[in-house]
Length: 134
Image (cartoon, rainbow, N blue to C red; front, top):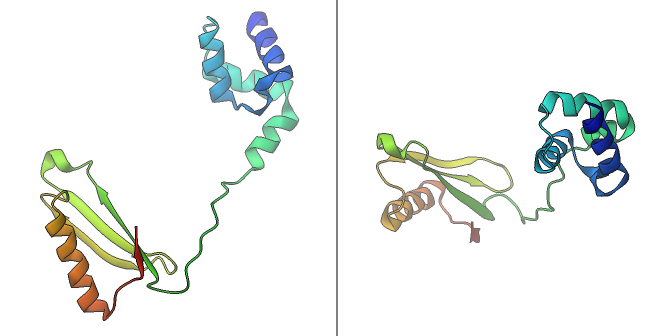
């Protein structure tokens, strides 16, 4: 355990000061040290409590997002995890309001006619179309 502590301490002094315990565990394994991730977490907390607290407090920084208003941009997405069971989910939301435009299940979502049909149906229902789609 002393060799692991020494390795982590050296990493913290070099470029590893921004790494969390998961990345530090990977670096340990790459260096040939067989150590559990939980042990790396405890050692990191002991050696660098301020760094651990800083990494823990950082929230996800989302990129800047601009849209002129509701229905300015619609976001399409498909979910293929259930494809082996014959289910493909396709959905669309409004970029600003996050309102659900459509959520449909079909046996394919690779056919552009299917997605185009969902889009045209949504345009009819909502009485307009967005300026941009993603």
